[in-house]
Length: 169
Image 1 (cartoon, rainbow, N blue to C red):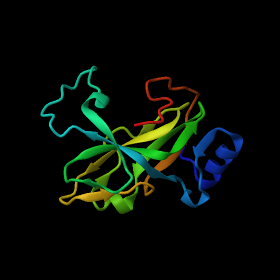
Image 2: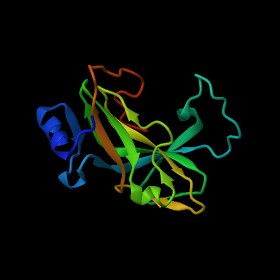
Image 3: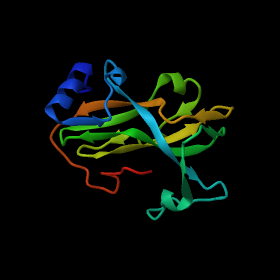
């Protein structure tokens, strides 16, 4: 079941959901807008081929850049961004990242396929930002670029993997 504004606020009040920093103006009817943080991870443009194996690691294939000024994302390119907000979910909640329609309609994707947020995480969300438009786009820190959709789980679970407490890109 997807939580509405009222239920999201109840979960925050009960301590089962935390969004830090939290701005009530970012809360919609059934989602919360997340801002693009101050870092990007840029994939190395000289790489010609990546073997998709369990050993593939995006960190080794990219570099971190600060988003202290707008970043021009070329058509067909992908970068990793990170949310300004830290999202913490209890073991009875999970979440989904979705793009905002205003940007999707321009050809900007904020997650390629990894939109799920597992129960029990407490981290900043990494965004796989892809420009599928035929023109360049400038990315700005602080823009409300994504939305968090919160959902109850049936039962409880806790993700303890590599990204459970990620705070950097």
